[in-house]
Image 1 (cartoon, rainbow, N blue to C red):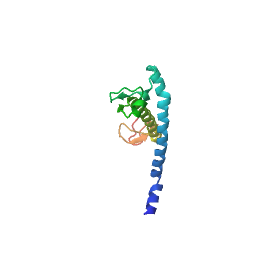
Image 2: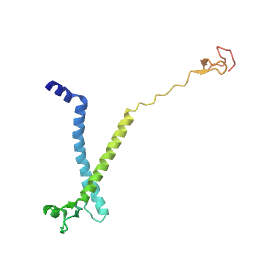
Image 3: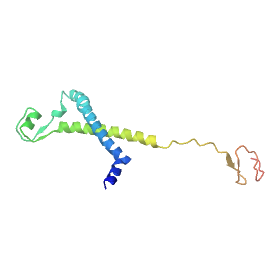
Length: 144
């Protein structure tokens, strides 16, 4: 049983999947950093100096100055700013995966081979095959 498990784990597709998961997790962190540290600050600046990670809706009715204060007090909050950042994360990851899959499909597609011009044609009188350069049919001797 241990040998079967080792054979299963050492198969190419299982190892490929493990590598893909590890690389995907690292890529997810990169995209999150890109969204939170590069994309959202200029967007927040354009929208009037808004920090998206601190946008929330307080459900308790008690006013709190910041999201951190509300969370420290245990107040129920809807953190829609973090949700917007997560949606942007997802859209960037989906776009990159779409582009990678599209490129992989193009690379796997067999290239159309050039078709050489035909070397024979059909005689219009007797319908037998003759060479393209023929001026008279070899079968019915008709002038072409």
